[in-house]
Image (cartoon, rainbow, N blue to C red):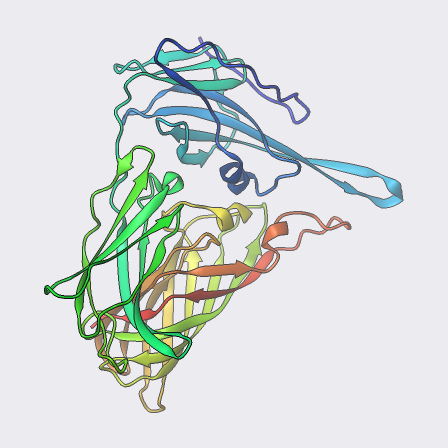
Length: 415
């Protein structure tokens, strides 16, 4: 029978050595990892200590368990006093066969665990606990490559090097949520639809979700795909997208018939702001579009988008690697230059995180009489005070994180 283990804030966090592995087997300790633990706690003072407890194998075969994490932060007080704040939480974790966390979810309360638990699957893989440490001993595990990336978008624009100008392609994508945290590299391939120009390819290390390809041949339609690789293998190709490069003088670009604005950036405001206390957030995004080109007439534009979070969130959302949607669109209004083009309206969705991603949505009206989809990859958000989100000031005041700046890659309005 399992027994409930409740770890107090002042409890000692001690590790134990793994049991000796069997012949030909590899034994690895199961941990959540410091970056993932920080995304849950929002604090790390001298490191985050972890207690891991294996609980068996998930329905898809991967090892699962519960992890307790804790960090203690000190600060000076009035009169020379010293106050220590302990931050702790439990998480449910699924690991891959190389002991990297595939997915994790914060638990509302303490987990019920068995420090002496052990289990073995049909392939000879074994998980077991030794007090407050969990281990994976692999036999012949059923390795599974990651799912293909989704949301691939591509655009082509001029690129200057010294006095020379070339065409280059920017590609962005979204990694499959189940393996987003363990992707080791992604490979982008752009193949000309008609024979002649060279095939372009590049590999991005780590969890990157955008890349540049060059030199791009002018007046050429490319078929673009992306694959993701982790320790268990390489995914199938993503669903292909096509993009046509402009002619030699820079005209055209983007998907055939698309309007592409090369520059997109602006500000983000949150109400009531992020702290360690969960709250739903109202979000106002103000953006400026420049360098617009395509069959429609706008050369520049501004937009205001209103969004809300789909659930109550805390500081940890800024470091989340989850690909699950965190926001929902409320409204979008865009104004265009030259004057007289009118306004467009629609909806825009932007993730609330500093770890990248993409924006998407729809608009119509003004120079776009029918509904159009919009997208932009290579999203970068930078929140003021994010590093100290939820941390009290010397006077004990916690300032919510409310404002940010953002930029994206080329903003595309589909034909």
